[in-house]
Length: 394
Image (tube, rainbow, N blue to C red):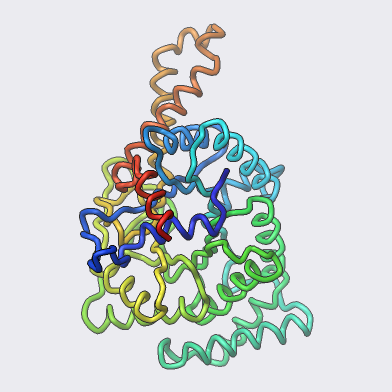
């Protein structure tokens, strides 16, 4: 069975780098672990099969299998529909979890994009405008003293955005996708939004998930600042001293207001990294911000590292979930390329053996090997017995 939100919360309670041991001491940094978030792309059965087999290998490993908004649209009935893609993804994942016997696998919705800001769809009806204005006013009041001043013109643009038909359409599709996929973790991609609008929108989405959708245990990941998109240059500036402390306060206040269960913010990573491309993580920012969140909220809020393929190293523990996508795509594509190159003449001649399913099972095997590699890097490969022992004591 797949882990639900409650089960995944227990996994992160075990992973928590701030957790105290029975002896009353913080766990050593060397013993800390990170949960792997493996992104699946269409055709789902190739990668999902590999992910589940890797999670079941040896003594078993906890694993989050993720489907992005874009991956679900590609798999859907047309380029606009993520709902039918979510139904397909859920069915494929349930099948391979059962077939593999993997015991600590959870599903996540990754990078679900909100409408572009500022929108072009115009305002909705009077009730939508009133609700949007109340949400914006509440966010402004909550952020007072933490975020900078916002002009009346900007505030009006926030109200226009939240009351627009485009935003209403986003919420309808997001709700339908979430109900189809039933994720234990869901991420709303808000990196282009101004902070106050981000606060209002993220809180609105979390209230939707926990209220009308009835998924109170689903972990919702919020985003504060741009974590980047594939193909974009990484423009990152490290913060130190008072500047870093101010940023940490902003993120902690953002989480306190929205109630988010997971958080992503820039630490110098980049999406879609090539094999030779490596980015050094800003460990100091991670340490300062994660500790401040813990102090302000009184709870552990896992940091989700985006662009995990290009990380020069993994800061175990402080990174709660390491999202990896490109690494697995490259592994599969290169195994396919090797097979095609070796058998090109037979493939062109239409030889069944050269064109058959072995091509794709070989690619799936390459992804399984790459997943085990990333589980070892995260320190979670074969840790199911330790996780079970922890859960027995909870």
